[in-house]
Image (cartoon, rainbow, N blue to C red; front, side):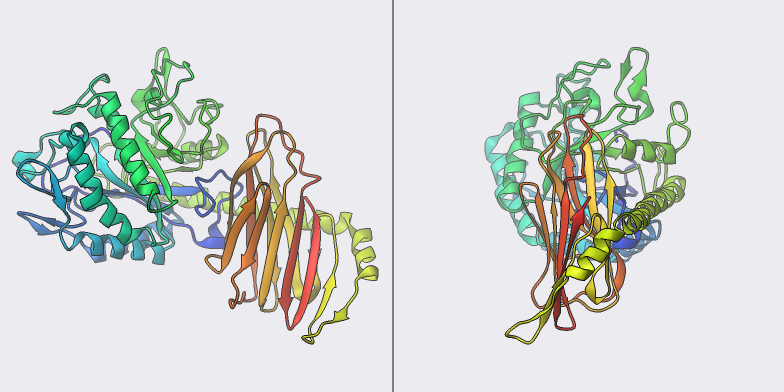
Length: 525
């Protein structure tokens, strides 16, 4: 967000949480196969630039209780994602010498980050960690100490940039990339404000090429350590598309290998002759020419009454337009854009509406497939066979056209959401007995130009996800068991080229073991 930040108390905001099957938001676009649709929030800090590490004058700023309370509050509203800022303007981290070159990290920073991520994970929250903000180019030294801003030399001096990567970023990544709550590394928040050929508003500025190089170097450093997503929090679509529509200027962030787009929206972005509005009808990621998923990483938590009926209306529009998430500003507030109290009810309503509609479609699909495939069921019943194996276990098999009841009390139902640009085909299982082995396979036909997007399940780390082309395989880890339960979802998603995908030739199959007997079942979408 483009704003001024009060000196001593900088408060606030960001987090997101998904409570697995009960609140899975489907069907929806996602940023990757391990992250659900982000019904998120900007936290983004408790104390601006002070949350992790130690300020040379003010001491350590990490407040474990505050973070735990924040994540619990977000989870209670079924928010499943949090955008959290790290260095901000550099006031407390990393460590600098007198010339502004990075020398390393204090001993608190990595343990602070690890604890925060563990608390996020315990509350079902995925974290987008934003390393820097445009504030790094401002001069906040008179109010927040000698390291608070004026760090353009990290971009203009190759040695300084390399020192940041080797002495600060790499140790941070080594300490946190294994944390399951970490979903995204954001290089910098709203960098456009620090670029000299934009209406530059910061004390220092750099060229567009210098900013792009900064993003690329950090992106490459992250990718050398992890496959987790890397993005940039663009201030506006104005500088994030080359489609030439709506008075947009250029795409500053193309060609940098970013995993998904993150764009911000505020009411000033719509006016006479221009519109940088991702919520507008038809303003999908493909409208802007993006070939990766996209998240609306900031928008006013109070909504935009000049253009939309409510903040819930904006959330629903983001979802309908095919974005992979939305994150209102902000958890604590402190400015006119909104506070948690302004959007928490909308977040809960959004989660409930989309999770319940997903469940309804699953139930409906199960019901219709059950009636439409009665002959198939009876046929499979008469043709099913059992045979003893050398281990003394037995097996049986059946097939259906969309789900049904297999042996061992396992029920399978399908749920589809198909469009010209995004498709989600899922299998939903319920089991009345413990499973000791499980493999789910979804095979999507390469028709209507579909390509792989993502895959995920709502069970968790006991299930592995893998794919080969458009064959999606979910497998229970050896030695793990799956207890009795319902609404266990396995999702295969694809992107399209504008033509609606026909799913009738797409297939699913399951193989599972319970009570020493192995069963198989299969069908079509």
